[in-house]
Image (cartoon, rainbow, N blue to C red; front, side, top):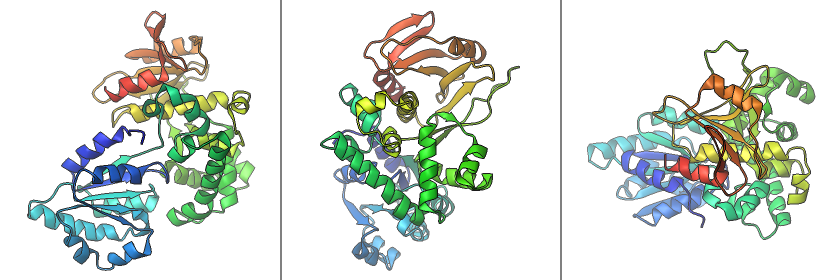
Length: 388
């Protein structure tokens, strides 16, 4: 098992909150992480995709009250969202008897319905944590190239070959489109959603142009917005918003859009090996997306992430405003082993005046690039952020 950074946060959350929701896309490793926690304390695990486990919960309050001294893990909670009402009563009863912390750990895909049910039924009783696929800080330098090509879903990353990994990701996207998304959200034609997902992969890291996407898919702008909202809610797509600064410059106001897992980008585009990736036009955007996901995952919770771009081309790929810091960190992302500072980055930093100026790249050494600007390997900056 590759250690997950979120394990410590999950333990803290269970010590402080009555219920914890661990949300993330399928196959990201939620169940594995939950079972690691289960090894440390008496626990009951129920898989709500199993008919026999669902049958045990036909009278949920009666059944779960028999396990009040155990951590109850409810996997695939989106299959039975009505359980949240029962959990509320059990949590309140436990509070009155002094057993209020760490009662329930619920796992599920971050569907709109799931978030709505938990926030309405368990307001003030539940803490949400997000587990994405493995990131650069978790896999380390040795697996970084494989992570970029195959993505961070454990079964894809650790597959026996690149071809086997690509087959897994192809099956994953098909299953998500044809089975999982219809269960989790509104009914959407699978082929239409696949075309949108593929178009976003082609434009990885580009500014969102909803009108162009709508024309290409022959739907209206509101429909595109609802489809994109669904992919964002399912943690499959990231909408990176622009930095809002009170400056006398024309700032880009459209968000940038990334398919969150680089391996899914490559699967959607039919990129099967490193040679094909390096020669493909998406390689730069794909590496940038991997770096952004890794850095955001490594940063402390409640870190604000944005990008900065003006109409005349001054740009910062990623601005991270850490909790308690007045000024953000400005991060430029480069794929090569000999990074250079772009004039647009320097101009943007003069406007934003960040606390730190960093150029993240794919090498292994830290070194100064210019006065106040440091070149930092991606894995090193992930480790620094995780301890910030």
